[in-house]
Length: 147
Image 1 (tube, rainbow, N blue to C red):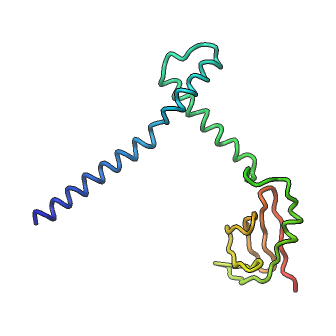
Image 2: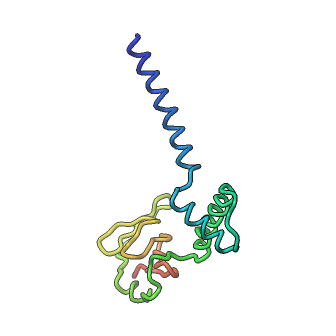
Image 3: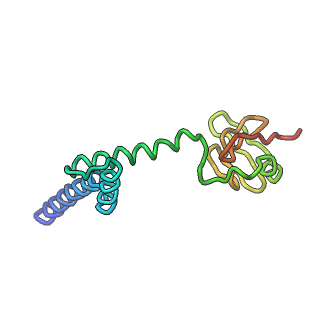
């Protein structure tokens, strides 16, 4: 009985420490970046920053703004836009579709794929009864099932 109570107490203490660590990790900003970004903010405004808390809030706002600007591109920035989708579509062959409203699957080349899978450098956007829609990072293209 005493051993079981010790285990429960130890488990509760570990859980509390894990929650504290998680909260600290979310709220604390990286030390190296705050100093360099605060210095950059002070240089940009022409006056040195007096309040570290104000500099910290400016840095976090700037960081969030940078991350959100990439969403407006509506394409994957890591995929080169130079590759022609027609050449990518020519290399891929749609060999079959297993149609189901709940879980459709397609066979592209030798791979069986579902919606959201990656084939080469292309993402499967949708599977329909007669075609598969893929995205190469810049635009969508279709692979049609030949009858």
